[in-house]
Image 1 (cartoon, helix red, strand yellow):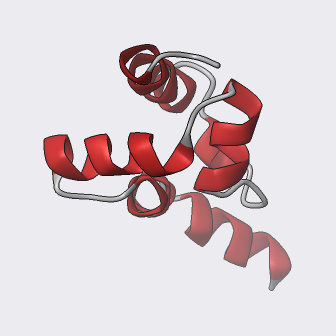
Image 2 (cartoon, helix red, strand yellow; image 1 turned 60 degrees about the horizontal axis):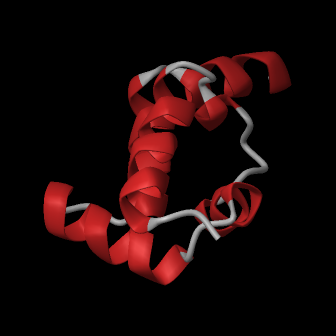
Length: 76
């Protein structure tokens, strides 16, 4: 299993470089499972460091990137 600090760094890397938030089917638990990270511990660290849970961070990235507005435009 990946260490807590490593999973924290990898999570931000996945958001920033690989833009995983663009996959609307991914939730925080799935991302943690993929990384081999303990979701509850990483979630607690993210909440402590940022004030947001892992799922909230994914949602905010999606909203701020315009991801949802693009999806809605194509579905219309």
